[in-house]
Length: 160
Image 1 (tube, rainbow, N blue to C red):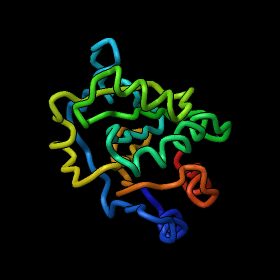
Image 2: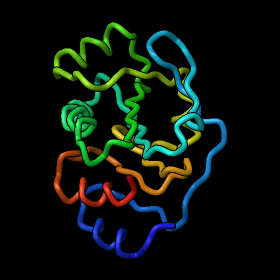
Image 3: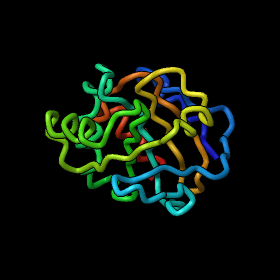
Image 4: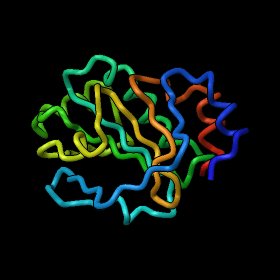
């Protein structure tokens, strides 16, 4: 359960929307680069970030390096980050996007044919969905964010 202190600390973080009620989803699946299916349920016990992006999305390009570095934060050792391409880009195009931005910590994931985009009712890119250790959505980031912002990291560490 989210406490009001966590919510109030985060109210001035740009683009962060904290859920009034935790949201439960069933059957959240996506693909890795080898077309192997991953299930979000397998990551219960971890703080999970699903970041939805596409190669043609300029704000996605702006935020991806900070998302990459967030994964190195020693205070967030229980954090799992899944950048999921929903732009129907090929693996090669996605790989070039990551190489151009010097992304070294994150893997590329896919959501064909945009089943998660529909399930989560995404309205634009980038959108980042945060799940607690019980696999429940507790917040979203609509648009881009600096994932290295100290206020954001301090807020997020409350859930780790």
